[in-house]
Structure formats: C-alpha cells, structure tokens
Image 1 (spheres, rainbow, N blue to C red):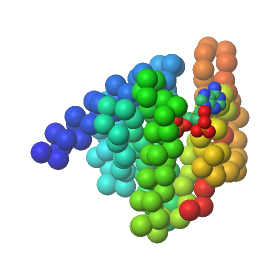
Image 2: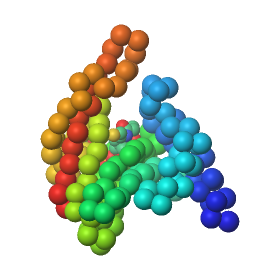
Image 3: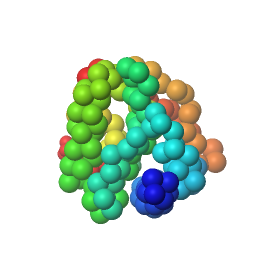
Length: 145
Ligand SMILES: CC(C)(COP(=O)(O)OP(=O)(O)OC[C@H]1O[C@@H](n2cnc3c(N)ncnc32)[C@H](O)[C@@H]1OP(=O)(O)O)[C@@H](O)C(=O)NCCC(=O)NCCS
C-alpha cells in the first residue's frame, strides 16, 4: 500500500517536473523520484496536481533537493507557501539549517529564496549545462531557521 502510494506520487511528481524544466538533463524521471522517496531521510510537501518540494533531512541539516510548480499555477504564492510549510516542519523537528542549490540564471527561484531569507554562501562555477556550449553557475544558498 505504502509502496503503491509513493509509486503513484513519483509519477505525479515526474509529470510536474518535466513541465517545469526545459533542459532534458534537469528533468527527474519517475524512477529517480521513487528512489528518492524510498529513502527514509527524504520527504516531500505536495500541493495536489499543482506542485511539490522534495527535501532531505539529516540530524540538524536539511536540503531542498528539488521543487516545481506547474506553469499554470505559478506566481500565485504556492512556492512561497510550500517553503513556509517546510520551515515549520523543520523547526518542529529542530532541524535548524536548510540548504539548496539553484542555477544562476533561474531568477524567479532566486527571487523566491531571497524573499524567504536564504543567503548565498558559495558558487559552483559552470555547474549546470544549459546547452552544448553553455554552462551556468550553481548558487549555494542556506537559511538558518
Ligand atoms: C521557482 C518556482 C518553484 C516558484 O514557484 P511559484 O509558485 O511560482 O512561486 P511564488 O508564486 O511563491 O513566487 C514567485 C515570485 O517570483 C516573482 N517572479 C515572477 N517572474 C519573475 C521574473 N521573471 N524575475 C524575477 N521574479 C519573478 C513573482 O513576482 C513572485 O515574487 P513576489 O511574490 O515577490 O511577487 C516555479 O517558478 C517553478 O516551478 N519553476 C521551475 C522549476 C524551478 O526552477 N524550480 C526551482 C529549482 S531550484
């Protein structure tokens, strides 16, 4: 039963993910998402048929692995709401720090993370390939809750 549930969720998340990222190499397959959800240190927040966030939590540190909102539901505050909910969950379990990684050209996501108080603490140069000869940096951000 539990397995069927996470399998169905993986398929729903993969559909949302594939509509959320343009580059093939950034899209998560349902198999990959299933492998994440089977990990006991990994959990998710899901706004049904709209968007989701997958995160890991190890002792005092959490990491946002991915998040995506279907294009037609963007700019309605759902991303903000999910991240606020994540902060509440993490503070309940005394997980004080949350990390994430975002492509430097993803201005909408960076705006959202800035607004929530995430601070840049590092850069991985030329980390994401966005086309054959074009790479962008990864920006590493964290927030102390
Ligand atoms: C990033 C993402 C999750 C945000 O979700 P969302 O539900 O649209 O987020 P919200 O509605 O809470 O906030 C969006 C903010 O971006 C702003 N925004 C919209 N277009 C923008 C642009 N071109 N440049 C900068 N900011 C922009 C909105 O005005 C809003 O900010 P505001 O509340 O201060 O006005 C969503 O855009 C998405 O799924 N993107 C594709 C996948 C992705 O990039 N995931 C993150 C990977 S790290």
